[in-house]
Image (cartoon, rainbow, N blue to C red; front, side, top):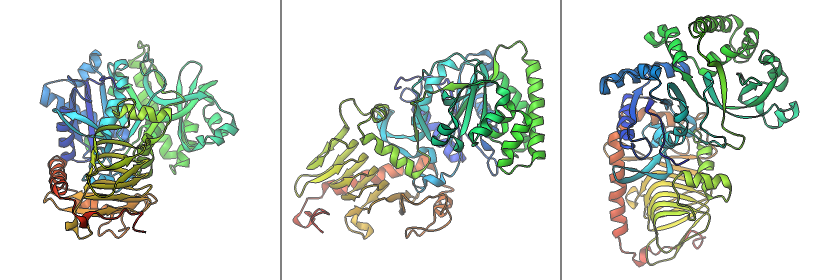
Length: 543
């Protein structure tokens, strides 16, 4: 799980040219830490009005990244794939991250740059690990089996498979899923399988995909697959052979040249490739797509596959298969605010999954504290603290209970059931369920020396290139996607307003500026003498 294995080439698809520049530089520095030492990094912008969808987006990003490889390294990526001499991993990070708001705004719209409670070494310096770096680190375990293939992953989901990651490739396209025996209709309902994209596998090892259907409908739609041996929830991540990749690039060349259209891999590639036409039209009708439109797309894919099969008749690979990640897979989704909080707080639990998470995020075995200075602060056995300095001599003792702290510096703290990441302040009082993220707090802001939250509160800082910080508040019960355009929780800006204000922000410059702001504040705060006027009561004593 923590071996430094990975893809020979890493491609990153970003929302802007400045983000692409940031990840190019950042990941190049990660070689030998998160990436293999000889890995080539190719970070590109998806400059496609309205978004390409993850199918066209994959093809477009591969084309742009291949052109960048030729420019930077005089490397022909497709030729090397055909030769089977390299493996390529492509990571989708584009998107606003509305349901994770306000955290992506705090990273100046750099959604994959949202920090996790862990650190990595970059050029000999410890820095916070980002979600994308965690995803790249974890998915590298599939590289060894995928020479000559393009692998595609989502940049906000980390999963630890319980099934072996090394496998023998048998299909032109394969997709990660958690397979189990075909359940009864009752179990299907109990597990809520009608809410997910599903992969079904027959006795011959061939697979098909259906999406959000009842048990009876799934059986009907999959009749052409034959006897179903296993079925499971799809993780969405897939890989394709160089042959299929070439065919897709050729078929969709008109869309790629014009940068027009929007196609996703599940409904527009895998389902029309693996289902009967009537079954495909039935599923697409549930999405509001009329039979004529879905039928025309089905026919287009069928014609492409007929040509593909004729050209690759001698190839032993079959069309579409499943790669089982295991029934007990650990799947940590950081794409929503509540999931970010819940998955981060998992580190405080006494479970096997929590043990795996702490190990994956670099917490030394047998302890829940790493690279910390803890003074005059009572820390329970559940909390996880890394790269932090909390507490000061004199005054009353603070406490940390069932919380996760990373890169936190303060003279006094009361934290219970909360997540604090990259926070610098004199005093912190954080109530259960709260998140404080990327935030500096001083009495110069006119709110005293204490940053405090109520239950479930979320506070982040958004820095501008002039060094100013805008405070944005939210709550665990607030879905950023539903209130995106409205100013909530007393904020002067809506989440969309923050996104617009960050439009020209340069993550590369701001990364250094934010680090300096935290260091500068901590120099001032930590140097202050703890005078009697500062020996304030705890929040419990003040009530």
